[in-house]
Amino acid sequence: MARNEAITVSDAAGTRFEGELLDQQTDGGLTVRDADGRQWTLPRDVIATRDGTTVHLSRAFTDLADPAAATAEERTIPLV
Image: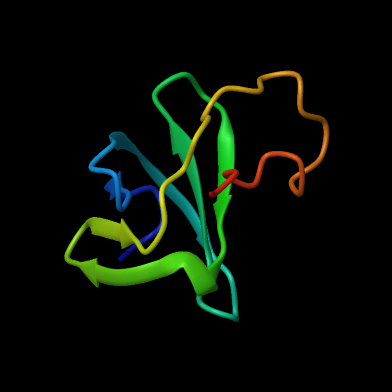
C-alpha cells in the first residue's frame, strides 16, 4: 500500500468505510482519512488481514464520528 492510496476498511461486523491511506506506522498500524476528512489510527493488533487496498479488522468498530477529538489517540477507532 502506498501513501495517499484509496483504502477500504471493513470490520468484523461488516461495517465498511472508504478512505485514504495517510501513513503506515513502524509497528504495522495504519493512519487513514475518512470521506469526511477525519484521521483515524488503526492499531496493528486489530488489523486481521490486508488484501490489496482492503483492510479487514478483527473486531467491530462502534463509532467513527468524533470530529472534535484533539489528539491522534482520541481519534483511534474505538473497538468493542
